[in-house]
Image (cartoon, rainbow, N blue to C red; front, side, top):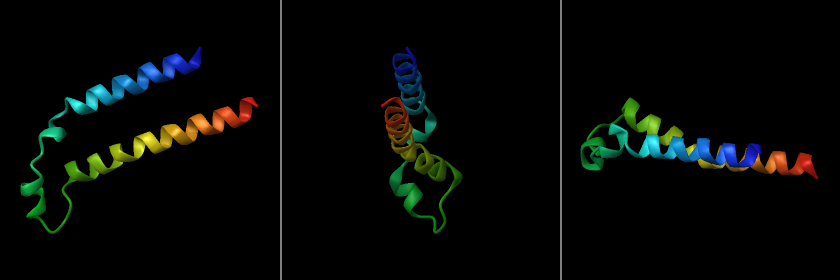
Length: 65
């Protein structure tokens, strides 16, 4: 039962992230700065989420064998 619940929670996270103001950030405007703004760093962290979830699922799958 944890699998479907985890999938729903992940889907809710994706939908929430998709409708956040960070999605509307202009890449051209962000490219003018020499350092990364906090919003772009946050987007980078969100890019890691699928890999963390995949690693967690793989670890759980190995333990269930």
